[in-house]
Length: 211
Ligand code: GLN
Image 1 (cartoon, rainbow, N blue to C red):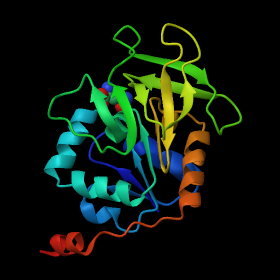
Image 2 (image 1 turned 90 degrees about the vertical axis):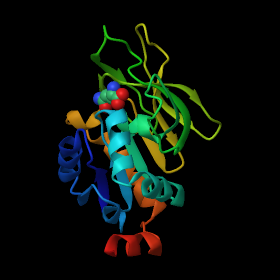
Image 3 (image 1 turned 45 degrees about the vertical axis):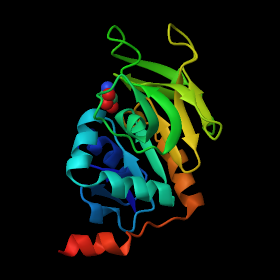
């Protein structure tokens, strides 16, 4: 069972991609929706709004704890921003989940190139991936544990890091879920299968839900 964080943003596109792959999924809006998950997708959208809604819903810490316990995660765009340890050009009250040791800059490609496509070589995927970028972040720093999976191949942003992996967490600046290509999701599902993890909420959170 794969969860898709559904507090805000492009949830349906990921649902469609998982449907196409025949993978069961569930929207994650409340703490109890984390129970029994083997992986979670954090979609694109607006990262500061997602951060606020996670905070208001009491989800920030349970989600951080789930990731720290080993729940595999895949973040696209705003989801990538949420997974970062450090965010540049954000609001001072925005939170991140601190799951990947990286510094991410929001809206990094600038207004002129709000949205664009590029064919990318992604490590672990045999054929190039058509990557759709929408007000996308890029990664400005990665820690020693982080594997860079893709960089922008050419143009003014050539060399910018746009796909990474650290352990069981993966993130892309771009949106494979808006294309027909399922290969990036398949790469994530392979990580999920290798991890063989099933998340169980700590007893105090289960109890807190009952009262
Ligand atoms: N610019 C958005 C943010 O900062 C991300 C855009 C997206 O997810 N397509 O959260």
